[in-house]
Length: 456
Ligand code: HEM
Image (cartoon, rainbow, N blue to C red; front, side):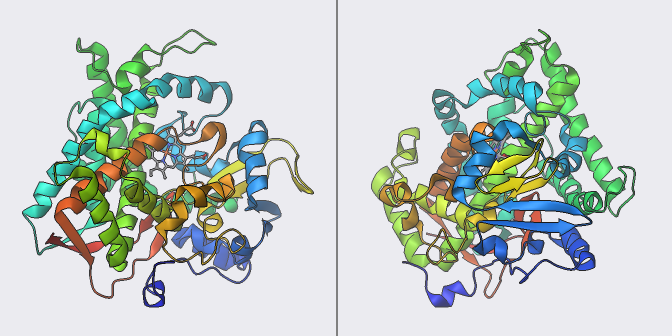
């Protein structure tokens, strides 16, 4: 095992309450940071039921039961109301938020763009964006940057380039601020759902979130309209979606469907990978011996040359490091469903209407599933170790029919960015800085990730 005890106490983690919080504390905590409401049994037991205002919420942690929910009996579950109400104002009824036939055809429309040959064709754009970031950093050696923000900009560049062919280059800082303003209010939405408040209920930040939503949707609508009426065809997501037709109705996507889907891909497709990288840099700075192993692998594979597409596959330890970082800090820390009928899970029953949590963050640190769960150890992802483990003990990308469509894209992208940057720079965390984990749909470092750039 790598990772010393001295490092251990600095590794950011959630401190769970011993048991379910009292109703008032629960609501206050949901608003501040929903993940802090999960009590210890969620990290220690196979299944846990909590109650709030007469409604039951079921947490499922046992890998065989997880497979039941996400795969074997997936047709008995839909996306949960909390996700829908938190995200639909921004993302509409597109691939991430829709269910049933409406989801299926949107997934099929987008799927070809994520085939392995397509993803390989995106790697040069990923490398170019990583190299641009590296040049910027090399001009700022000795300075401190917020790595969370830097990674957000880098992955945004890549998603814009590969999915939208960089149409109508957006003001990245403004776009990021808009996402933050919007996502910051989602915990209020979750709290109001728990309280069964009506949708019109005002809450702090609501107006700002609505302005952010209007801005983001307006920007994307402009891009879609230019593409619909332009004569240039690019080999990208927009072209695919414009050509797709719903097999049930035979109709193509409306402007609204287009905006919903394109914005969904931008949202789902850049912040998550940026967070995976941010937490990876954080962990590496606390584990120099592991960073050294990564750097040596990069040198051995590239022979000191610039990174190329054919190197990506060979960087297996680099990939293991990213996988282990996503175990400790899963960018999407939970998936939530609602049972549409009573569902038997082994000896347990989930009642129709019950929100069902697959708490990825807790599963990946579960006492029954992992040795020394809070220790950073990329050797857990060596091929033999992976084979010896239950497939559903690790699910940063979810599982089953709703598994992340961008999984391979994200992994290639993360390897490319990490390897390109580590070739030339070293990042050191601001001394004694301990990030606070904050759940805002994704798992963010609450105050960013201040790290100093050094050349290597
Ligand atoms: C490290 C990066 C990423 C992580 C951790 C991640 C995680 C996830 C997870 C957990 C889900 C399943 C949600 C559920 O079952 O409720 C999901 C779905 C999805 N992801 Fe990702 N994702 C990542 C990167 C990406 C990228 C790069 C893209 C697109 C370019 C993307 C697009 C999507 C879409 C469209 C869905 C919805 C799929 C569906 O419902 O059919 N994601 N992602």
